[in-house]
Image (cartoon, rainbow, N blue to C red; front, side):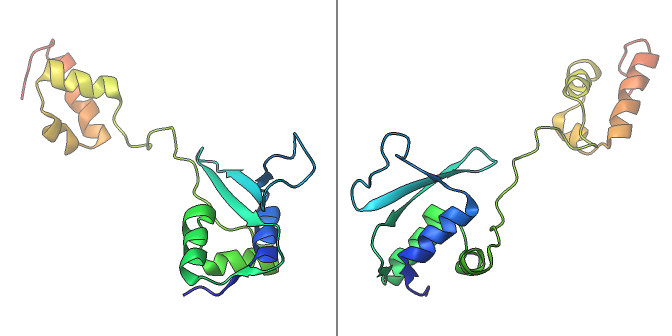
Length: 147
């Protein structure tokens, strides 16, 4: 179970990682009993957390675990490395928008299905070079199916 979460450590974590303090554009005064922070990840996901104005700590191990897991999305070890050593926790990288280098072009797949008469299952078993060769064989045969 996680150890108690000091409010000062929680604040230091979000400030070290560069979370944005909400509400500071409208007012420099405190409102309510918590500071509110958000962090936009490179994946587009936005994390949010609240940090108490107080100087105490959260002693409920279940609540601490939920804050670390759900709000901060870090392990306890990564949290304390950030607080004590300034090490920014690893975050997920954005999903690549480009296909893998050996992926088949969509137009090639469509032609292999619609014109050559192959099934998706057959195409899935082909390498990129084999798929191109099948298309070229179709074209070389004058557009007829030679399987």
